[in-house]
Length: 292
Image (cartoon, rainbow, N blue to C red; front, side, top):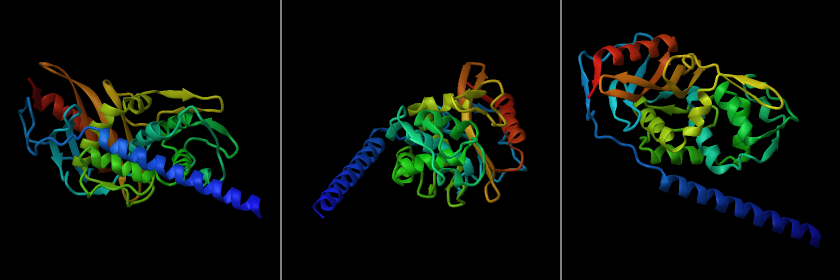
């Protein structure tokens, strides 16, 4: 009986310590990230030769300066829509802050019970948390997302919402899981522009991963399945799909202007053809937008 009480006491102490540590991480994350909130309607140094494009296949889009977060052009950018696996970008950012990436974890059956088989993960396999960032971001593995959520003692979603709020996201943008499978993971195109700007400044490593064509681990390999990863100037991003969300993407590109190169971001929500929609937006930037 005494041993049982001692065990319960120690478990309680450890759980309390874990909660205190998580709370501390959330405070540090929310307090330390910059707040990217450009003045509405203010687009510094850009000039337009034509009106904003209209995408027939997308519900919403935003083109933005990836340094300031300022919108260059947008369609229905204030309405929240499901974002699907774009969710995995803030999830990965939280992982790099909270989890000791070189620590290992053994996958369990609950991890691989998530919808979809992307990532080719199997119960019993042992990975570092760093390795799991690659199937999460390259192949959009929902199983990898489940591992991270389990590792955070279900606090990862709280941390994700703290981070995006710190980057200037409105209350209309909200995450309820790490994978994007839930239709309640919603965001506005404008908020995703701010979030992506903030994440790119604070967590360039996760964007570097998304530019890789493939990554080989000790167990298997993962191939980048982004429809725009092969395009010239691609700096990273994340795409997704669910029936409710349609096809979604945030993508950054290094674009060329008369005055030099500039990092420009694209958000597309509710698309039926991401490659074509991103290409149309980029063509608008190349043909009708000047940066001086």
